[in-house]
Structure formats: C-alpha cells, structure tokens
Image 1 (spheres, rainbow, N blue to C red):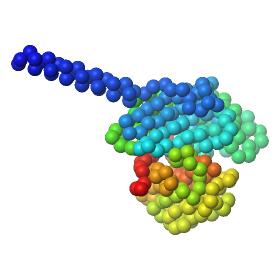
Image 2 (spheres, helix red, strand yellow; image 1 turned 90 degrees about the vertical axis):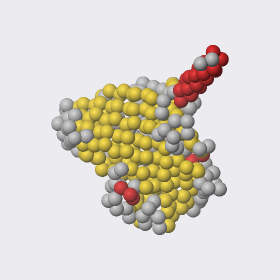
Image 3 (spheres, rainbow, N blue to C red; image 1 turned 45 degrees about the vertical axis):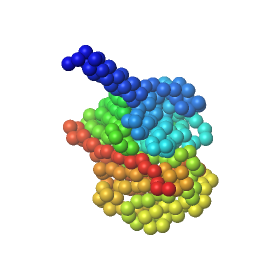
Image 4 (spheres, helix red, strand yellow; image 1 turned 120 degrees about the vertical axis):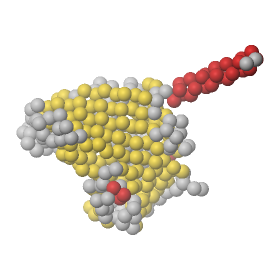
Length: 339
C-alpha cells in the first residue's frame, strides 16, 4: 500500500476516534449545578441520549432537593428537554426541602406505610423510597412531614443516558424491610424515557401497597388552561370533583379556563387491561405532547392540576415478597403535535 494512502487511512482513523471521543464526552453524565436557585447545593446530574436530555436530583439526607416523607426520593427530574420542548420543571411558588410537595418530575408515592396500622404512637413503620418513620401521637392531616428514624442506604449508578437508584431499608421493630431500585433511562435513538422498578421484601412481612405516579407535567413552562388536553383510551367517569375549571368529555379532560388554585377529581371507567394505562397530555398552543404507558394495569386514577402543573395520577397495585420481587416499567414517549 502506498505511504500516502496509509497516511490518509491513519488520519481518518484518528479523526474518527476523536469524533467518537468528543461525542462520548458530550453524552457523558456529569454533575451539574442545581437548576433551582433556592437550592443551590442540591446534588444533580445530567444525562442524554442525543435526543432527550434531563437533569436529575440525587437523594441526599443533608443536601438533597427533596427531604420530606411523602414521595419516593429517587428519580426527581428537575428538567427534561426533547424535540425543542420541555416537560418538567418547578411548579410551586415556595420551596422548602421538607415540604411534602416541593418536588418536580414524574415522582411516585407508595401510599400505604408498611406496618403503620399495627404501630402505636412513637413506634416505627416503613415508607418505601423514604425509610423508617416514626408514627405520630396525633394523626396528621394532609401530608405532614414525619420524623425519619432511619433513612436506609442510598446508592446510585450513573451512566451517560441513565441513572439507577438503589434504596435498602430494614426495620426489625416492624418486621418490614426492602431492596428497591429504580432506573431512569433515555432509550438510544428514541425520544423516550423509561422508569424501571424492582422491589423485593427483605423483612418478615410481604410488601403490599398502592403506588401512584404524580407526574407534575409542566409543558413548555405554560400555565394550565384551555390549551391543554388530557386523553385516555376509555370513557372517563368523574366523581368527588373539586373545582370547576376542568370537565370530562368522553375520553378527554378539557380545561374550561385557567386554574386559579387547584382542581381534583377521582376517575374510573378503566378495565383490568394494561392497554388502559395509556395517558396523553398535550399543549395545543406549543405543540408539546407526551404519552405515558405501563406494563401494569391501573388500580385507580386521580386527576389534579395547579396553575402550572398537569397531573394525571395513575395508580398500580404493588405486592412483593421475600425472594419474589415485583418489577414494572413506565414508559414516556415525547412528541410534537402536527402544526
């Protein structure tokens, strides 16, 4: 082979290697400043698959963005961008890390405290994604932040396009313990995100609870109002309705006017098929759309909205025993509406 040709091939190989290295560096996960000026020290990391980019807060008992006792501390998304649109962000006016709803992104709550009913005042019970909590002497109203007796052990595995959160908790006093993992992943070549969960009991008792995803969508930073529509693949029936700013019309939830405080309603009409866990939220003004599906069927459904957040809350039943873990995946497809 002529020397000049070997030189060109070597140069091409070096150029390709440099290009790959640059791309790897661009897609590599990295610690980033907290995007919320009210929590400048909260640890955060960015991930990307080239089509979707996201900033996630990391659990931390001292500096974590969220340190209350309602929601699972893992997978809190501060910002997500896809196709020129944004989907999550801060929606509440006042920040306090120990306030139950000072949180953003598609976060989950495991509703039932494991061992709560059997516990006496001052005794302990377990809240999945939070840790071992102390039962108050007086029943708390709403979502009070309780004392955390033992926050368990958190660990994270960070990749360029995914973060795996692992939480291990053990409470011999109540007989409950678990090993829980949640992986937030941006799938290669797709404007798609998955939340993959695995929950296993490590205590004497099985884990049994309802879990819902609050979602907290903030599409392109726009207010909640008539530009927004929520759709499902079944005919909705609303009850226990609070507020008059939204209305159920067949398989849709329509906004009649901007939200001033909040609205809430419980919903039914879904079947036991996983096909009914199929929720679309769209902003027809900006063109942002997102579809949420799961490999588990709905067990309940609630809709809540504030002036900035749109929250179809989808519930599933969670049951996990020792050596018999439960796994489930929720998928988010981000898309743009045709102009």
